Length: 82
Image (cartoon, rainbow, N blue to C red; front, side, top):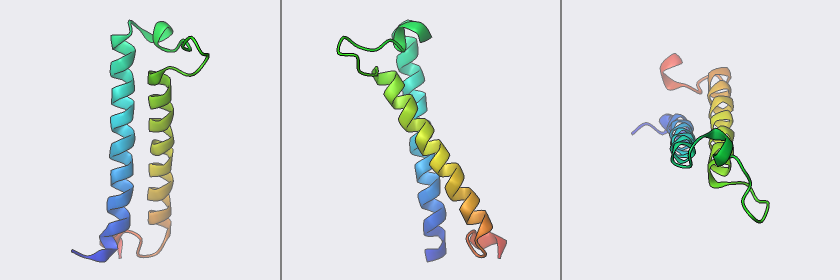
């Protein structure tokens, strides 16, 4: 395997994990009976599980976008664009 593909594979893995977290969050929102009830804080005032999953998925999605942008900007960042 060409070592220049490793940064691309890392970026794609981060994007896939972020997407998986978002899908899990939306599944929990549906399971809890809708958006309003799923986003309510728990008894201790902490964020609910769907909200935490959505936050983590969104952060990984932003990181994925930043990494791909950097790979497009760096000469040779994407091996097939050389």
